[in-house]
Amino acid sequence: MSLNFETNLTNIQQLASNKEKENDDFISYLKSFDGEYIDKQVHLLNEIVSPKIDCTLCGNCCKTLLINVQEIEANNLAAHLEINRAIFDEQFIEKGSNGMMLIKTVPCSFLKDNKCTVYNFRFEGCKEFPAMHLPNFKDRLFTTFMHYNRCPIIYNIIEQLKLVLNFKE
Image 1 (cartoon, one colour):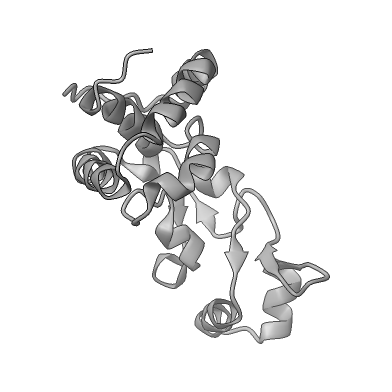
Image 2 (cartoon, rainbow, N blue to C red):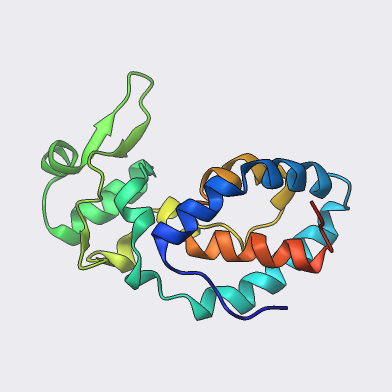
């Protein structure tokens, strides 16, 4: 297994663009494997890759993703910021007609110098990303590959997974 990880976002975006067909083939290849086996491999790779990549050197997820917000999360963060919920919503939340809430701005209002200024109170979507530690990886192939060109952790885990599974395009 190669332990040289690509962390340059410009390179990752170019490589991802060049590998679109390869990744489509890899997605089909992944579907032939048992889900629990794939989860085990992804989790092992996550334990190797994630500690080697400093998210604060990137922050691309916080710069490019809209995050869903739950009521309890908004309440907790508003309390932490010591502002009432109406003001919090006005400043930071976009509400859909169906009641769904999203952060209002991209990049995230709470990102400063590639670091989360409310890290201990961040939203669940922020805590979970890039979700490589979660079960049922095969059920998240669409979203994983949607972020493949955006996140060095995802990019490198997928590239290592290709090696582990002896994928040959």
